[in-house]
Length: 103
Ligand SMILES: NC(=O)c1ccc[n+]([C@@H]2O[C@H](COP(=O)([O-])OP(=O)(O)OC[C@H]3O[C@@H](n4cnc5c(N)ncnc54)[C@H](OP(=O)(O)O)[C@@H]3O)[C@@H](O)[C@H]2O)c1
Image 1 (cartoon, rainbow, N blue to C red):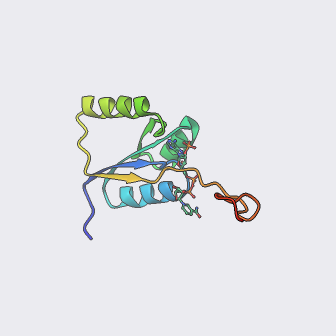
Image 2 (cartoon, rainbow, N blue to C red):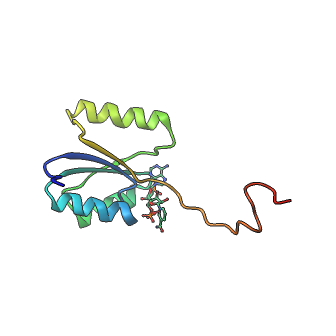
């Protein structure tokens, strides 16, 4: 698949899988905008990959998303793709804490 010269918004791009994908997308000459809640993680990602654009944004807060898109719009950014990678993975013992009670 030819995925170059696109503009991509990547949530949770400051760490882990998102950051790895962000690096790949930049290597393939895409403009990549990463967002996350912790500014220091975004800044570290940008230090390692200077081409990244970063925005602090909590995707669980609708007002923060509105503010992000208002900023992107004001900057004339036109997105080609959204990668919704951001999430918090919670681990628990399903037998000790079942989602539904086990009879
Ligand atoms: N690693 C695995 O084995 C695995 C397995 C299955 C699924 N996944 C999924 O794959 C994705 C990436 O996982 P990962 O292992 O790379 O984890 P990770 O390093 O913790 O990455 C998650 C990223 O999402 C950001 N994030 C979390 N909540 C956010 C919010 N409300 N608003 C904005 N950004 C938010 C985090 O940054 P901030 O905390 O700074 O916001 C972080 O950069 C997640 O969706 C995860 O559930 C991972």
